[in-house]
Length: 498
Image (cartoon, rainbow, N blue to C red; front, side, top):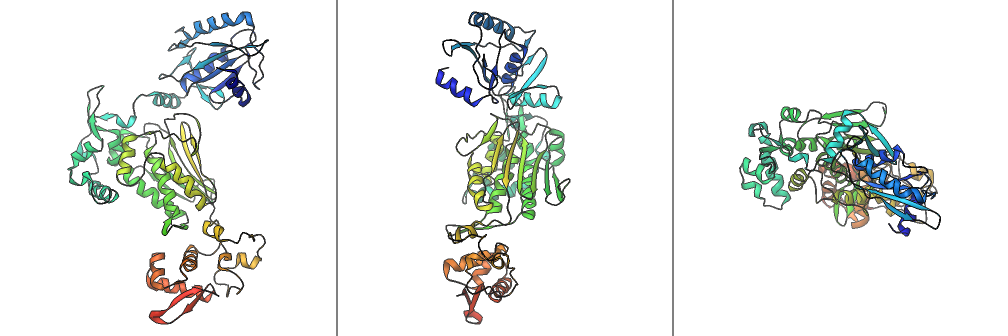
């Protein structure tokens, strides 16, 4: 390691992958605990002769060689380290008076113990692991294969929800723009084509895999295969200690997706957003990405309960994960890492997901339109997406608001006036309408701003309501002074109030 890089590491300090050890008179036990935790996590770098704050104290020059010999002897001793590991420490001359020993520890494909104790790395600390579930999670993380590929040789075709296949064929056909190979295949051919039936080349086992069971298995088959599988959907807006609404979902991933989407739609506002000339549901876009992620990228063999939680100022999903590293994911450092490639491909075929990595980009893009804030992605043994919520925020209101004025400077009556409070003052512009107006009113106002007028037929299509309801809404807006009615009967149009 060169000095420039070393000085940068010393300045940043200890992290999940960097540890400083003083080691004045020799290498102490906590250094080997760190080696063990790095092997069990994502690897890391240990610097002997450095204080916790990054100050270089150095190791004794004459003792450095013996320290390295003793270190290699310990990590190579199967009675102390199991399994043993080969590491090659490096002596770095920091300046005229100080030398540092640098030990690079790569991530290991095995779970290691030091003196019969397993250690894991959590943030910048080495933690003893004794709970059976936590140890099992470490072994899952170390597995060289995707658990979704595990063959269940006794699973039969009758164990699956074949009644869902006609719907899946139609969804795949529609998503492909009119033609998809699955539409001409029989049920067994579809399973094989989707990678849900195959042969394990290492063991020779042939049959349906875990991906097939999770996607299309009957409920009792899923329970027998992965007993801990569940997605807990909660709303905590009023009763934050328990919940306002709850749905425990244990069915296949196809129906789980529909149930979670409906749960989210029931409890989240649907904010209007016009992208180019297309009316998009920000709520549905965000829900789709969060729901598909919590279903298709989780580690199903873990006992950790996946969650979808809606709170007053945020919603989040979290699930067990085979982490590639630990930290926060952004658009800049995004490195798409498929956790269940077979399930992810199936979701993409039926339109439940897009290409790998697009979900992160979509959430960063549309979150600012929905709440004015950015989401947060946290990678670890538990993967978590946090989406800020703000029911009063309206992107369309914000971008149309006069830059020379602010809501704080507006008259109180203009900011808080309810829809049925009578006529809006003539001097009040439409863009200053209170954010308390319904989303339907906002859509109509923006449409009139863009097109100059609107008819009840156009309002019917825009709001996706019956024409009688559209006429009633337009009439209410005219009564409130937001729009002006012109013409009568078939020639009636509504225009911006002058």
